[in-house]
Image (cartoon, rainbow, N blue to C red; front, side, top):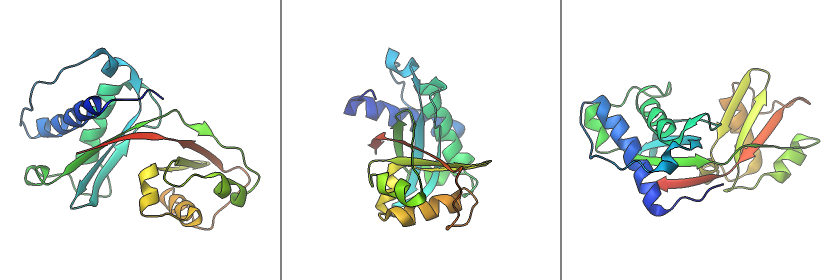
Length: 183
């Protein structure tokens, strides 16, 4: 995974914030657009208020330029996360922006749920859970709230629309890491 500098992280956060502000017709500062922003990238944008989640939307695969991915996911996190009402203009100043750049996901190999849980690295791995049309992911940051692998997986299965104790032989798990930049 390409490592991004703190300056690059600040630019990604500014891109995300400007994308949200532009929806309120609040032009942001003119930002530079170095070449690395045109390279394919997958990013999640997380919005928080007083430390509480206010929106989180992202991409699991690098299918578009990193700049486009960050801006699109910032707008989606602010206005289209189904768990929250659209962000209001008054909320923007009190909202913190976090951008996570994802490494490519790697499929995991395991013989059982216990085997899969034993392979997970709390605080390091983001996890994608898939079974049929059920799919969900937790960023590595979720380990801060759910440090126990069994509890982490149970909540991830619920997020995918399944029972916390669900397991089947054809469950697919992938893991990835992130570079995280926070305001």
